[in-house]
Amino acid sequence: MNDKLTADHVRSLGLTGRDFLRELDFTAAELNSFLDLAARLKQSRKDGHEPELLSRKNLAAIFEKTSTRTRISFSVAMSDQGGSITFLDGASSQVGHKESPADTARVLSRIFDAIEYRGSEQAVVAELAKYSSVPVYNGLTDQWHPTQMLADFLTMREHQVDPQEALSYCYLGDARSNMGNSLLIMGAIMGADTRIVAPKALWPGQTVIDQAHARAQESGAKITLTEDIAEGVSGAEFVHTDVWVSMGEPKEVWQERIELLQPYQVNQAVLELAGSNAKAMHCLPAYHDTKTVLGAQIAQDFNLQGGIEITHEVFESSANISFDQAENRMHTIKSILVATLA
Ligand code: CP
Ligand code: NVA
Image 1 (cartoon, protein in one colour):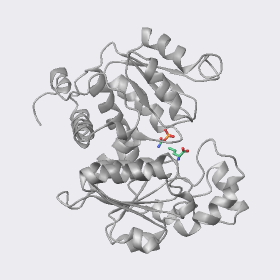
Image 2 (image 1 turned 90 degrees about the vertical axis):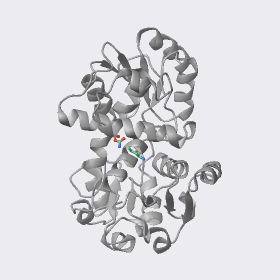
Image 3 (image 1 turned 120 degrees about the vertical axis):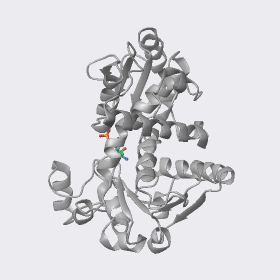
Image 4 (image 1 turned 45 degrees about the horizontal axis):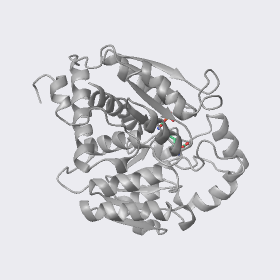
């Protein structure tokens, strides 16, 4: 662990040139390599001797949806490693509305060393990867959020009371969304005790559930999908949630979503059901108070005081480790960049 991280060591991981589109494309060993490298990069940054392994590398980062964490993580990671980043979006470039993913990919790969994409359709990031001659990374689609999974797993690794024990976590909320899908599949690949706790109408699609069971057979993961909160939450070391209405969904779905998900709010009672050491996790941004325009509007329209998907009480308590998660976005995204480009 003390020897200096070199490009040769990184290349020996065998991840050079790989796309990072969805968790399903990787083995548990490969995902663990990204996590180990992230932990190492995190430590070397804190110690002040981070090696620059991406000098003169250029990343094109396309954001068709808004972002704080993912955007700043790619940016700071490239800068720390001696590389640079160019941001593109539909409003200020031809991407999306005037040039197809296939043409965009062929143009960008002539000039850049890698491409990041955030948008709605998984098919778009897959198409970029098909036509690109450089690695393509998924910075979130409606279906998957794979860079978030590395941050979540690094954070759980850091906070697990007994790292020798199997990891156990549950996800409460809209489980058909990117976060529900990704947490189910990632847990299945990594051999975790993985629980999806949501009304059946909001469970992941059957294809994703089947993929999870198939990967669990290889890894020994325990997969639970349940509507029963006590069954799903009891004994889980980590309790995840996410916004109930995701980017790109119309405002009109809030009413129905709140009716379905109100019992699945992450509050003190739910956390206590999980166990006395249970930690709350959220990919962020979160609606836990009325200090955002939308948070205030929803709280007023639906008479929800004290938080929506997570209560203000839990969010401000020591059980909340979502800011560690947010920091780890940068270290894990850096690990993807270094592992695939160094
Ligand atoms: N968690 C996450 O992806 O945050 P951003 O939308 O701010 O990038
Ligand atoms: N499910 C959320 C995740 C945000 C990081 C969304 O897609 O808006």
